[in-house]
Image (cartoon, rainbow, N blue to C red; front, side, top):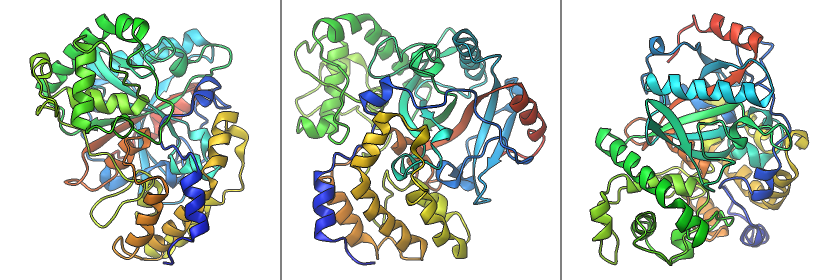
Length: 444
């Protein structure tokens, strides 16, 4: 493929492309929608989720015991690619009022934790199926807008998310998840992904860190404002501080322990989740006694990812490309336009998301060229020069966006550092009844 033009590279360098959490305006102004997930008219599908919002079937290898929870589970194939889909667990939601939403989410958190579907260290990604057919930016993001971290307490699952406030932190029942009856309609679909490095020891250690964090939170966040929300998603804190990730994880631990009472370490949502998982490999004493270069016990769930990968890795903007590559060779090229030229139906986007989508439009042109070449059969080695240019356009800073967790889980077994577990969808009575019927079919 041809290398990107200088004018395109200049536009990329000037754009504020952000493959992180939704911008504050988008978080405060919820996307249009918020009703229970719309049921498909197709008799063989629960929800119409396109291939660019799905994962390759071969990547769905994490076992779940369907007998341990009461909800129906279905393999929801994408309309375009038979080998792409989502393993959906349907949750019946009695109504669209806030009380009904809260009740459904609390019940889900308790029952799926008891069944092992939600576990300490899991990352729950806010997924908005209604963003399909809108604009290229949310398509590349795979409809994912936020990342929360799971911990358990008393046998039930809870979430702790940056920005560490009452709109997010709870039992998946706060404004972001259940809505507030006003300007925030909540979210009705959640992806569960699991770091491969988590084990029982690390899960216990994570619970300990979160317990300490909750105790010291009013001081390090309220009084000293050390761990506030980071709105510059293009510049992870390790890049902003010119530190290693080992040093930033160690610093986070010291802030939680209140050993460090001065350092400002703002983080966006997925950055916080990534750091807490990395911190779960350490004890409090190891962090307290860590040298200047950081604690050796720090163990990240995966390395920060480039925008576009090279021959031996995948980039955080390549999730839909992995979906394309799961299709038959002769069908792949025809799938690219649906991602990048969907007709700009922005009706389901908040003004905040529309603004970001417009800002990153120059980047989408280069990505479209890259996707097209790969779909036509070009190898990662052949597209490496274009990938390098795309990465240079955002200063070649590697990142850990919410979508990065899902993209990592889409890689082949033995390569990926995350596992896709399931997608929880909250649906009405009709959707739930359909899910029960579809659950009789085989589910990976």
